[in-house]
Image (cartoon, rainbow, N blue to C red; front, top):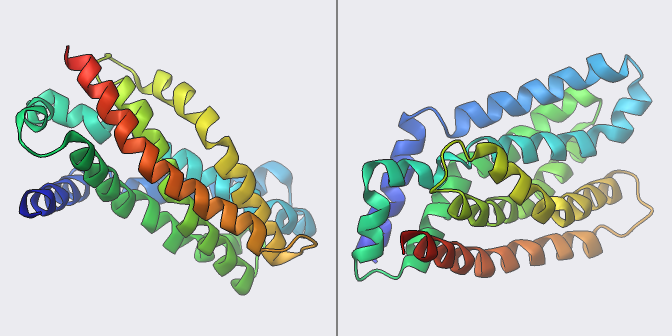
Length: 222
């Protein structure tokens, strides 16, 4: 447990110190949200209607922004090889790295969502509903992205391929995240059904992601 805790704190410090964590992701999120009104025009009802979808798309793209450095930095400095040779299960090590990535990327996006929702004419209570769906769904974006990061870690300039691999896995998360947000704002669907499915997707990704990523890393080291 001490080794896992040390690995977690190390990844959090590196993400914050390297500028690839909360600040860059939130800034990119803000840019996407800010550009939307310029693209669709000053139609406030339209902005309110598409607001949850644009917030989710912005969060998805922002979370993908830092995925290529999730494991690549450890490969470059040799830490990834050391993790494979220690007594620590590689699945647990990868899960801890994914958790640290979500804490420095996904969680700040969910916290910033209510403020950024105001740019899209989404009021305070609706913005907090969208933030709640992001809080439940961004772990799935991280741990599904972990699989793509492990598959492309040995490739040079694998960032584009990483996005191509991960985006299809995130489509269900996007669908149910937007559905839950729209249900909380306007209905007519019940908020609980899509939100429960969204939570289930995050739990499934937390189980599948580390094991699939560890298998991909072991295969890449052979």
